Image (spheres, rainbow, N blue to C red):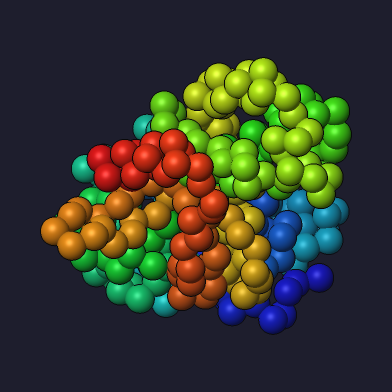
Amino acid sequence: MPLYNSSVRSIVILGAGELGGALARQLAAADITTRIILVDEAGSVAAGKALDIRQAAPVDGYVTAVDGTADHAVLVGADAIVIADQFAAATEWHDDAGVGLVRTIRQLNEQVVIVCAGARQLEMIARSVREIGVPRQRIVGSAPDALRSAIVSMTALEAGCSPKDVSLTVVGRPPHQIIVPWDDAAIAGRRAIEVLSPPALTRLDGRLARLWPPGPLALASAATRMLTAAATRGRDIVSAFVVTEGGEGERERTGMLPITVGPSGVTSVIVPSLSARDRVRLETAVQR
C-alpha cells in the first residue's frame, strides 16, 4: 500500500544502467511515490526496464507507476531527482559529465532535491555546490549508507550477534579515510568498545577500505532508504556525502557524515562524539 503521507509524488532516475534499474525496482516496491521515471539516452532500454518493473507490481503488491524515456523534459516538476548510471557507458555519472548533468537539472528544475546514488560522485557533489551554486542542502550522496550497512554486517559477525543489534555511524572520505567512531557505537545496547576487544576493533578498522565501493544493489538500497526518509519526513539518521560550510576563510568541507533529510533536502548534519584522534582524522578528510 502506498505511503499517502509522502510528500514526494514524482521521482526521476537519471541513468538506466545496473544501478538505475535496481533503484527503480526498489523504489517502486517501497511505494513512497506515485510515479517513477527512468531516463536514459537509450530510451528503449529505460522503457523496457520500466515495463518489467510494472509487470512485477501485481505479484509484489505495489502500485507505483514506472515509465522510461530518453526525454529530459520530465525533470520539470519532479519532486526528487536521482543521478545513477548510464546504460551505454556502463558507469556512474561523475566528473565533468556529471557536473554538466547537474547543470542541466538546475536549468529545468531549480528547486529539486538531487540525490547522487553512485559511489564515485563525491567530487561531483562538491563541484556542483562550488561551480554551479547548488544549495548544500539540496544535493546529497547516499552511497555512504551502503558502506555503513556493510560495516554493520561485518561488526555483527565479529560480535556474534544480529546486524539489528548494531548501531554505528561512519564519517570521513572513502576509501582510505573511513572512520567509525567506536566510542559512539553500540551493540545490543552496550558500548561497542565494551563488547569488542581492542584486537577485534583493529581487525575491523583494517578491513574498512576493502568494503568500498559498494555494489549496485547495496547502493540502490541506500538511495531508497534516503528517499524514503525524505518522503515520509522520518527521523532516520542516514550516512551521506554532504558539503558543509567551512570556517572563516576556509573552503567547504566535503565528506561522509550522518544526516537527517526531509522533502527539501538535508535538514541537519550530525557530527558524532569523536575521540581526539578521530576528530583530527575527520578534519583532515573533509577539508581536502
